[in-house]
Image (cartoon, rainbow, N blue to C red; front, side):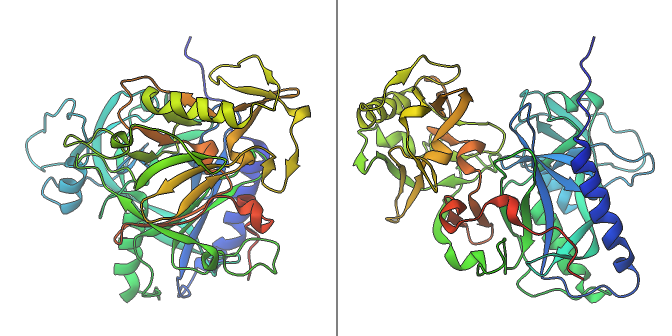
Length: 433
């Protein structure tokens, strides 16, 4: 018997309905100026994956490596023509062949394919454009509902396998100019500025992901221009505290993921001896350090993992070990660990970037509580056939503030908001009007 997805948590359903109904009257008449859009991000307790709410209550898996949205289509959806630019962009951003590519005579419909980020299966479907309502924001609160379109590939029912509970599709945030969710929202909102919508000229293809570390309260996604505020209310615009670094793009054209420009790793300030050539791409796109929201924990190629784990063992040789808990190798008794504002008091891990900056991972993002009195180093050996040298997983990005500026290939980041005494769950989703 096929296992049915768990119902979405009632508290979060009520949260979405409340937000939608409180803002819906504001969509009547002329809409106010749009500086940015905002939506809640939920962490699933079963899969440790993240979903974004579109139309306030419909949940879509967040995938930083997918080029577009895969989800159900309404019965009366409109087909996209096979010569449309969004059809071309979609079909050249996938490594999956079109399945059942027969096109009946008459209208030349666009079909596109996508690889499922969890199961690896390929799915094909008609491409369409679907309208949603999403909240605009002044950076502090939702202010109104704005209608916008996104590009959607009509998903077969079996495309929902492996998704978090309650999810109805996959929201691709990958690096594209026309068809990813952020790209399409930016394009659609901007071109409609000559209707009844006033749009900030700084609204373009950039977005913020702030993943929650708890399943009880949502994190936040922004699309568009700053300011971005989190509680407590005395905190300044979070974008003022960002460090900026260059994002790399794989030479493999169908790979739309975001890659950090990394030169090495350090544990407790000591550089780890690594085969550093693995941290850059070869001609086919193997190697590099990728950001991913669809694997829970950072995964390393064995040639990277082994020297890293040995360096961490050396740096923590004063802490008694506990038996391994799969999928983790190195575990500790938490009663022997101190506590700090940024998590357990363990040696920091630096991802050393080529521009001289560091993405520093502290205890809150390096050690995972797995059972009573036991926490494990949340890094996984992916084997020698792992294509990226390192894939930075969701747990390592929780309560990080990440601003992706796609056209300029830059990432503004704060590795942990805990140092500012806030978290990703501290956006005020109460209507501010």
